[in-house]
Image (cartoon, rainbow, N blue to C red; front, side):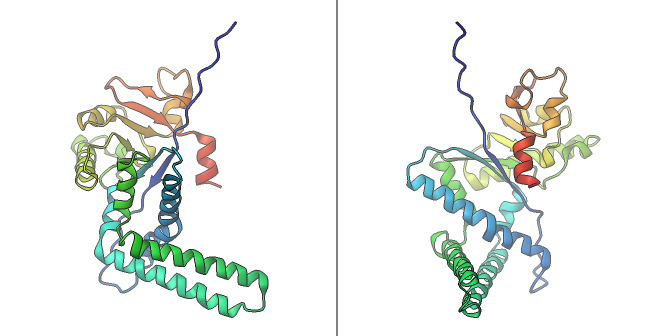
Amino acid sequence: MRPAPRPGRVALVLHHHLPYIRHPEYEDFMEEDWLHQAVAETYLPLLAVFERLRADRVPYRVTVSLTPPLVSMLDDPLLRDRTERHLTRLLRLAEAEVLRTRGDDGRSRLAAYYRDHFGEMRDRYLHAYGRDIVSRYRDLQDSGHLEIVTCGATHGFLPLMNDHQPAMRAQIAVAVEHYRARFGRQPRGIWLAECGYQPGVEQLLADAGLEYFFVDTHGLAFAEPRPRYGVFAPVMTPSGVAAFGRDLESSHQVWSA
């Protein structure tokens, strides 16, 4: 009689990153809208879900990456002012749509939904979070519900730095230092920018005290020797740092839907 198989585990990993953009010389700058839209449409709704699960005592565990460029933008006073302005504009637009669509039940209900949604997101950002999104993520990590991993200091693509190892080392070392300063602990893992791997990176990660990293699907699928379980189990490198491969199918459902 064959023994019963052990239950498997799934690691849910969400990568949070935006390029660093800050233009105080302009009152409005289009590329800055990427940040404000991400706050309104991704980070605030995600935090709302995470905090409701915690309040309901659901024993969940999720890994998220917060890159140094993104953390720096979320912490910047000017960009916080502009994010607040963006949320206020969304709310005002939704309120105007409620008035405009009176008498049209379908559209009026949709407008009312967005008015309530943006009103809640704005209230969370201003009052519940004090415009400090990163500290809310830190609080969820401190309560044991999230594990926050870092990324290269400027989201630098390490394989392109193969001929200049000091630059590779700096990307990792500055990221770790930045993480310690913001989250009050040593990061355990790192999301390699664009999941790009270059042989030898694992030793640099080990030197920085990191325990694991994430790599693209083909990084494990075509590894030598070929991993027995493909991307469905981590691989331990000679440096003692574990490599986790992205699952192609689930990644496509999120990234390329």
